[in-house]
Image (cartoon, rainbow, N blue to C red; front, side, top):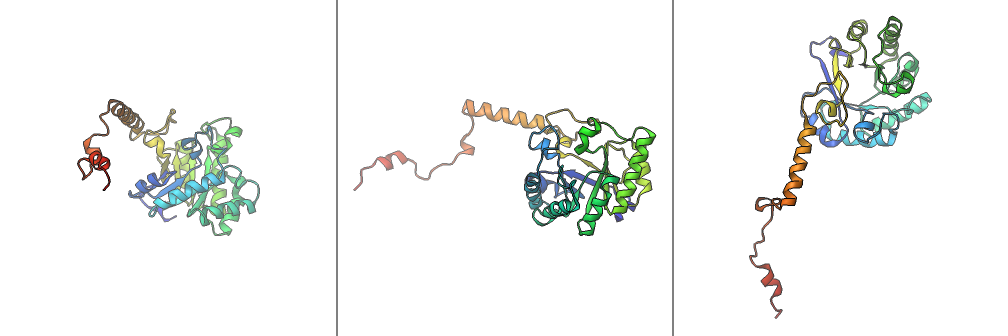
Length: 272
């Protein structure tokens, strides 16, 4: 929470496996989130809704093996915390105990304040998530910017206050107007981390595959691609296919040589 009053912005990214986590952890990144976005990025699902606790645990364990410096946060998947406090504590506890996460993130505003309180009472750090909440995509009628009118904006501000009171250590603000995000950031005492919420937040988060240009689909407006690795991957694979078929790979540089120069003559020699 001390970063709220620091001039240094909080920077977060998602990761879903050991290799990327290890790479990210060599940087000055503050937070690695094992997002339930792995449903679409890693598992090929259409929304975040079908991803399970078991799948999230497996991926969080993998990320944990490569994460030694950044704060590791795990997303609680759909229906892993909505039923009861007991269910939420049990599942969040699994992320901490079994998978090595240091905190969990869950979606929802005022209606989830009691659940957040129960988790923090159980000594489990919680990151909140309000605004556009992907697990509510069916209720929201799609991935739409939230808080565009006075009534909706007021509700999101109230959500921020309520989950702050419940004990979150930070709040993700997703898909809301930048001026609303600025008002919330000024209004509350915990850091805000924006994704599609403008520059006035205390920090920012993006999906790693979007940032690297590894996505197969079009990206949201708020995503900035810092590389186009998808094109490079496709080019590299095409080159590999061509060289194998041309028999230019493997060449001498990429092949092993025997110390015995004439293996055939040795193997065919009569036994004494």
